[in-house]
Image (cartoon, rainbow, N blue to C red; front, side, top):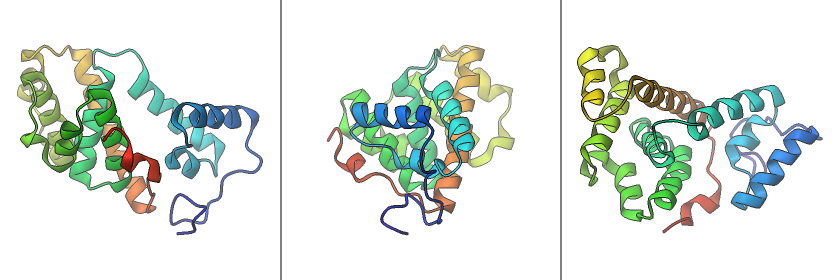
Length: 189
């Protein structure tokens, strides 16, 4: 992998970037101190980048009965099962930052079942793990277990959407050898 490319593929960013994309990247640099490599990776094709960011922003940032932390926890558990280095580094950092608990972030990366979780979080992560490992086995009883701890049907949709998005993203990241920005490794420790 070239030092200037975020993946093992020879797909450099569009040059020049369209003004809207450049503005988005400038905002990332201002708020995050970096342009996440996943965005740089998709920037070889601006339409693909726009589709990816629209879906990510809707699933991870839009109004939901799930908190931002809960969505990041799902991302980490799915990524742990899939052994996605990029997403474990990036979303593990987000869990550490949002929770203020570096132990939680590390435990979710290693084995979420060892984490100190409340009943709601455990049910949510069990469902995301089942969806990742054996989605065809999900039955009404699995959805009912989520309802029993307070999730609405809309929340169940959001849990499934986050888990589904990260299952797709993990596979693309792994297949292309996408590498996380070095900055993620030191954040919120």
